[in-house]
Length: 101
Image 1 (cartoon, rainbow, N blue to C red):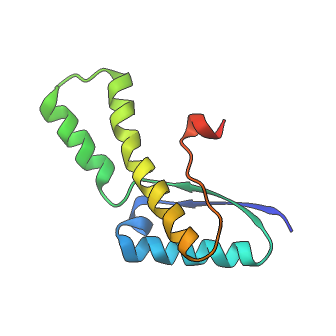
Image 2: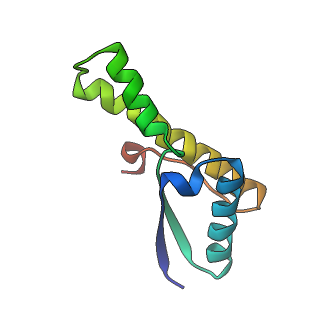
Image 3: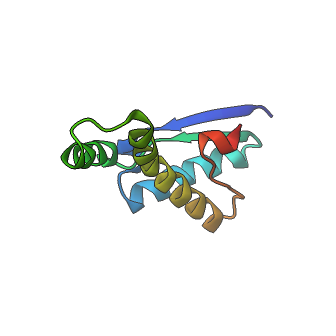
């Protein structure tokens, strides 16, 4: 079949149950014979919470450091989703943007 790209925003992966639900959806798509690429956001309000924390620490954070901080939310989501997919028997590896190439 074809390659499908699926994007899941923060509210769709807000907690463990939601991540498992997303994993089942991805597993179904994979089971239909498609290659699947997933783009995932940070869980729930993680990005907003990290931004608030950053601004409490530094009112004018450097862009590079802010980028480093904010990507931790997506990294968490990606790793947790890969774990949930693995439990469903779907081979999955999480990548950052730079790792994906």
